[in-house]
Length: 96
Image 1 (cartoon, rainbow, N blue to C red):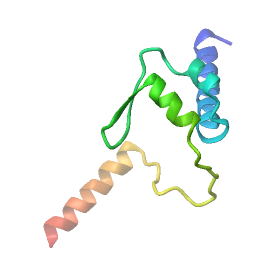
Image 2: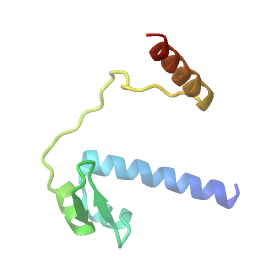
Image 3: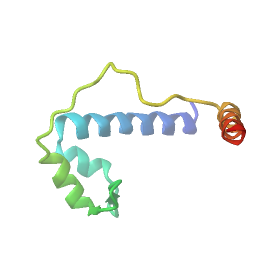
């Protein structure tokens, strides 16, 4: 196993650990080890949290998360498929 594969495996393991911590255990010690020291978390709303605020917010979150078996609201497309779809939409719009 080369160094790149080892790094990839470590990144994937940390990603899974972060997901299970944020949505499951909410363990602040684990979050401390996973979050970079100069972390700033920016929400989709634009509000920002420092590392400590993010850890506190996650570890004190009372929400319960469940895994859904519903299909995702998106589909994976290749660039070629996406470009073709965009062209079809442009053509339809032009023909109206």
